[in-house]
Amino acid sequence: MTPPHEITETVEPLPHVAIIMDGNGRWAKSRGLSRPEGHLAGAEAIKRIVKAALYRNLPVLTLFAFSSENRLRPEAEVNFLFNLMHRYFDEHLKDLAEEGVYIKIIGEIDGLPQATLKLIEHAQNATRDNSKMTLQIAFNYGSQEEIVYAAKSIATKVSENKLSPGDITKEVFEENLRTAGLPSPDLIIRTSGEYRLSNFMLWQAAYAELYFTDVYWPDFNERELDIALKEYSTRERRFGRIIDDDNSNDKKDKSFHEKFSLEKASK
Ligand code: FPP
Image (tube, rainbow, N blue to C red; front, side, top):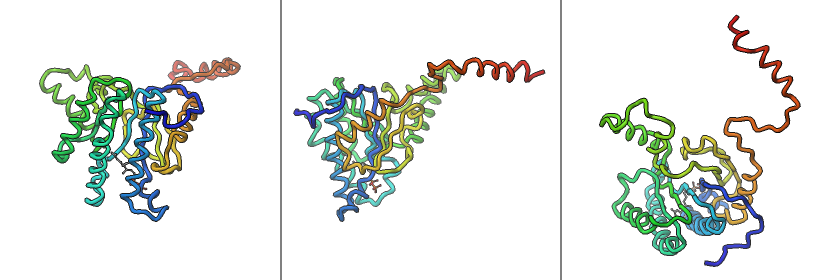
């Protein structure tokens, strides 16, 4: 495989990048094209970005390809999106497998058409021993449903005496999410100028850095990805702590802490 474009910036590798791919319809409309043409262009962008992620040695790339709520779209569009996923794997599964990509599909698979279930099973099985990059595809995925799914599976374990309620920790909860075994995303990118998570990885996004761009998904390319990664590298991730080398205010802080101490408050 030839590099997709010259990598101009050296970016720090980061464990997990997730993308909410949005704007196919508006991209098409702005060009006088149909929505299916927008989705076709969106599928081309997927090809580019998966290649780019491989060349940037990203260990995990998650793509939000189809939400549970997307099923409420007109049937013809839903069918088209399902067919696109089939086409994507028909065309690329072999290459992805050879490149060392492990494909993991997350989402509610119960109730999907038999052919789609087969496709998902085949893609996962054909790549299960690969470890260069995990391509996690959120398909028929909704984060609230995923959280309910985890709660149900924990409740079942408790009812079967395999787990006691006191043993339910954050880690146990995570092991029961559909994303079990993978790190939470460090960076979540959303295209097309919308500023929300739309039921995507609500649990896992607790400390993710969020990056929003006005670029419609079909126009998202290697350079746009590098801009996002560069922006990420400037973020200071504090995970709720204080990271401050400047101690010039320590004395002032201390005197306030003393003034408002719990001991004084309770007197
Ligand atoms: C948002 O566009 C995108 C989607 C509904 C899902 C992403 C789907 C693709 C990129 C197509 C290819 C899929 C696979 C699995 C190969 P939108 O229709 O919501 O755009 P709009 O908000 O502008 O209408």
